[in-house]
Length: 174
Length: 109
Ligand SMILES: [Cu+2]
Image 1 (cartoon, each protein chain N blue to C red):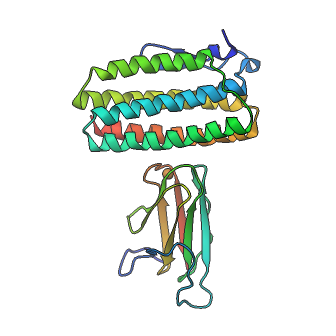
Image 2 (image 1 turned 180 degrees about the horizontal axis):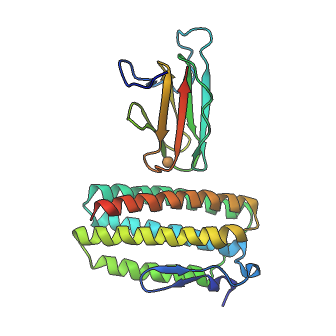
Image 3 (image 1 turned 90 degrees about the horizontal axis):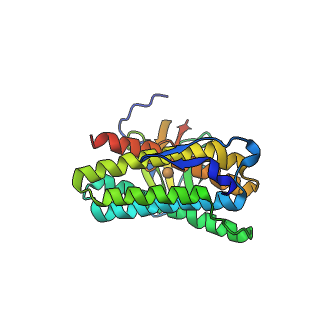
């Protein structure tokens, strides 16, 4: 089990994230890079599925924005790790994120129409909230490299905006 | 300096022109560059009627500069810039359509 295993655990549908037991047990920069990139990729995959399934213009606009914004951050993250000669390191947190995301995609793939839209948006709210919590409590404080920290901070602003945006769209669907 | 939305719009989007092409303005007219980066608008300096404000999107994300009453709207891809010309005195509040928590304002005298 890697050091990053402690603070994100998949729990029934939503992600439960808690702070690490000890500050010293925080993830390393290569692990943080992997977690952040994975979180972005998960949201891109969810949005691409929504663009295939949803016919709701508001939902599609939201999904398009998720693809655009998260692809932009992930491109920056890749450029940064290359520049820093850091190899993102797979870890239990990323694995747990991916596992929950795949389960959610499978669940969504059985839905259509308004039911799909609602589930997609509700999950977007929960997902962005969970990632915001992890960024704030663990990933940003644990990051050593200043450029990585700065990118994560921009990522936090972005995820907070997306969470608020997802909440607005979700409220409209009810 | 009331903000009543009457007659002429407070700010007009300068079509086409991307860089300060000096328009026939009073000598004091200035061009101010306001950078957007890391999900934030830089503060807009105090403006005078006749000034031009260039918003430069240095961020990795597409952003807009949208007036809250929709009197102007700039939609800026990463690296893009767009200009507004100050036509009358007053205050304008703006936000980003994509990231509505991004907010800014400008005051012209
Ligand atoms: Cu924006």
